[in-house]
Image (tube, rainbow, N blue to C red):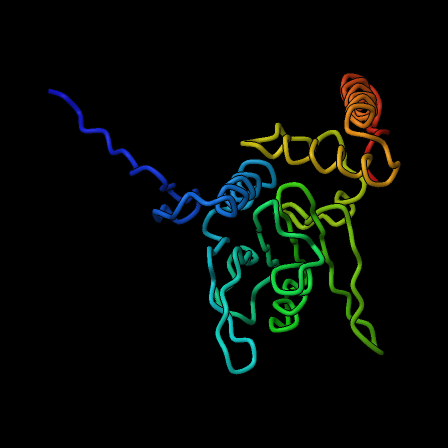
Length: 219
């Protein structure tokens, strides 16, 4: 007896988290890769993540691309722990409408959100909101925490926390490194590529040195 195999129409994608059918856009491509990383690399449960989650921002309702809740928390605006905004690669972090300031405004509307991440696949900015007695401050760590919430591993990873990259997330990391070298050092694309190769070889050497703690990591 033959089996029926469901196929998606051209231009559509099945969401990794909620299994809904969405348009296969450049922005969706970034979001689907981030969703896979959240679950398969950082250990979050799909049940902790809401896609296009509506929040109240003043008198209007907006939707955040991904809202993450601590395990066991009720899913409401007051309990959002992490907000992630995913954009297509042509959107700049400094864009007035869809840039990092949009993420800041969403975090401001969610009183208990501690972490936020903005990415277009080529650039990534992470915000951590710290409340002091006098004001609210924002730090910019390298990454959001994994499901266990261990903040120490965000900027100083351990060998035990290493996971294989999933989807195109390794490609995203390469793009971020390459563009940083290209912009910061003022190198043309060809020399910047060879500088990136040096970074990759250093990382490979460090990961193969299994008897010692990791020494080569982003700062």
